Image 1 (cartoon, rainbow, N blue to C red):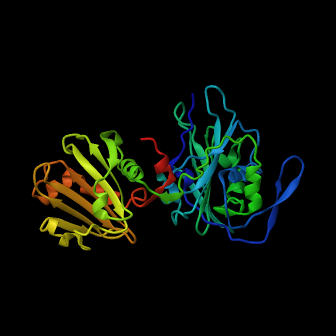
Image 2 (cartoon, helix red, strand yellow):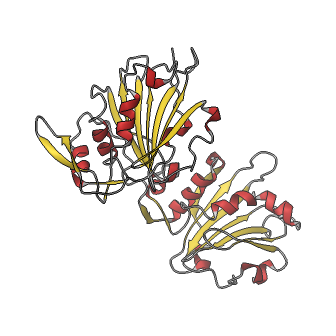
Image 3 (cartoon, helix red, strand yellow):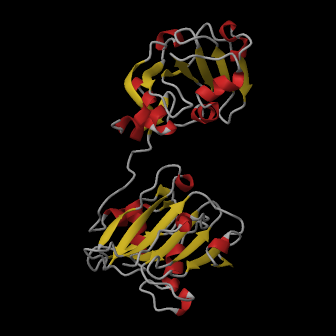
Length: 383
């Protein structure tokens, strides 16, 4: 059975069209016609993207649903997946329309060697790029993608449903290139649009769901939440178990949250240990503003800059029970700290860093899931 692989450029980056007063006709329920304004300041929805897309594309879909993407995917965009001609053996052809708040590369075809076929041209709204990949018989059916790069966003429209055997503009595709370009240049398909467009999406029938919803709402974290945030950000969380409140909260004072958990040995390099993850509006009294000046870490500390504020690696050499390693970040309005204990801590800096993978811990100290605030999806996790 021929497969159609979803390309990595499926949400390449595009630009926001200029706002104007022009309105266009959009089909409403039944024979009623409503005015769908192209510009506005209302956040677009997955359903609205689908509704506007179906004014250009065939409406005999077999499935309509939101494109799955997490907040890190191309700046937190959203999109709609429309399926056609699905059978018991195949999901059918896929028409994916994705909007992302990033403009993307200045020259979209600069890295097109791996895609083989790429052409860009300037249009009134920005840069319009056509990319296609030919089929590999019995392996991959190929794909066609059109992206529109506006000033500060991208609209990506991809069709994966016909074997692409030559220039798709010369082929009789189920969703022709002209239609893909119309969709990409529809000013109503933008990160912000009009309420009429959003309402049209709400009225769309046969919708299967899959919206991001409130998964990425920023909410106050909890003891459990900050622990789960660490697990999710660090990955490999089958290593972690026995999550409980951290006793370090008392040291950090009012407003502190914290989790403590056990980590099993991981490979030959990472020994079993106990990890505390704490966030608070302030550092504990014993910790200096410059962590390396703290008496506890005299001679065993180094500082590192960070995009959210300074970070430190500090350690207390000694056997399990007395030795400990700390990584600390001072953000604008909070302190985040990880303590690693119940392991033998060496005197040498590099060996101590390897015990807790300092290169990874540095990034975790910047992670948006770990702190006094987190994403709703972290609190909803079931780890």
